[in-house]
Length: 355
Image 1 (cartoon, rainbow, N blue to C red):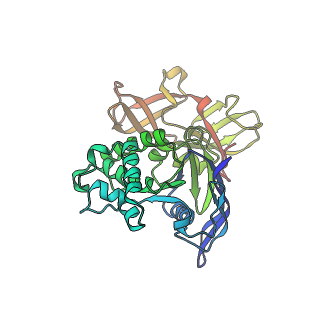
Image 2: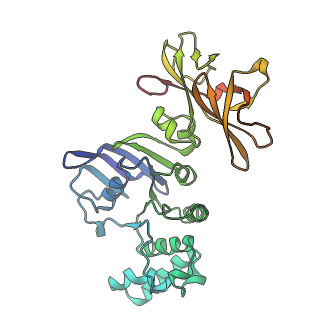
Image 3: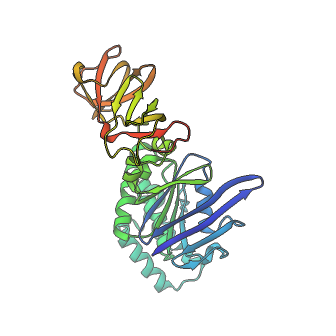
């Protein structure tokens, strides 16, 4: 049974349609990531769920309650903002309990909820500290604790890691992952960072131009994207796309390739058409000249520590492949490679839909 449900939700600002007939469902305990480029509608969708943005078409249900016309305070949702929005002059304890004090929750009940939240979030040793004395990950937990004591049905995060440096972002992401595993709280999280989506989500809602492109688990989205946009948005470096044509015999020809596409790559029977062959940078090995599919004219190398990313050209098309860090590859080399074609993706050249 769905815990969060959106039915045919649309929202316009004047003549601009920010959301166009968006529908999806999420089960209880899901970590849903709304993913997409800037301006795709994901933050607008989050604000519709909270009730902070109004006047939309469609229906919204949370925990089997229709909340479409409810005020934000009645929806039993809690939102963690990008800046955490902690009061710098208040202790962790006071930051967590402040909202309850404003709402005149009895002292004994406030203390109980703060204690439970601190225990769940591992904040007990930090309750008397000020925000300036905390790490970014700890501040994030305090912001979550402030939401947790409200006992919401749904947690909402609006790009909470975008202002952090790389190491702090990683550490905070790990804390969020552990927190969700402990609390199993239903969560909706907005980001444009596909790495965050892949590592945090149980369900990714990929958006483009106000519409949902695909709803899938992170690994399904990576391995079986529904179209060219989904394939290129997920994965770093971006997937290699080789222009050519698919024949009725199931062979792809283009970019210096003339190869049979293995069974299982295509969703249906092969049909002659212009196509693009999608190949991830890791779906490759250095080949002997006799069994090479292609030879890359190496332009430059990107060492990442664990691997080397070789950037170059094949038949005039840009290609990036990942090789072992021990490989001796230099700019100007001609590197023979062999693709793992059972991991390939094929897209219609005109529509971009995966074949």
